Image 1 (cartoon, rainbow, N blue to C red):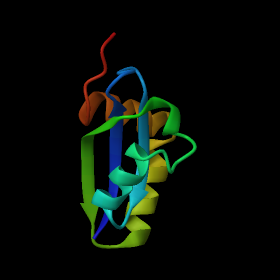
Image 2 (cartoon, helix red, strand yellow; image 1 turned 180 degrees about the horizontal axis):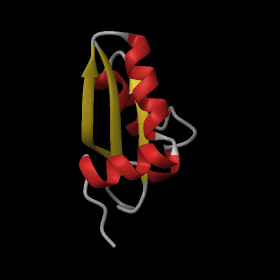
Image 3 (cartoon, one colour; image 1 turned 30 degrees about the horizontal axis):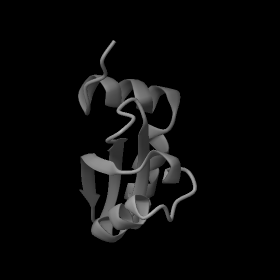
Image 4 (tube, rainbow, N blue to C red; image 1 turned 30 degrees about the vertical axis):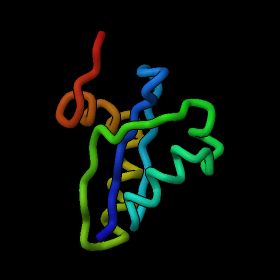
Length: 84
């Protein structure tokens, strides 16, 4: 399986990261250990959303979509609640 996920910083709850992984548990450990330059400054993280895909291509396509303007609007309305 391949996963598209969203994590939220525990200490800075306005900070989020959306990513892709074939091993979600290991990827979460990587984020919490500071192994990702984009997320190291905002540790620790908690998993707030994930979707599983059978194909790598579908997962990467969905991750890319979630990082576009229309994908962010869709996700904010349908996948996770955004305060404000």
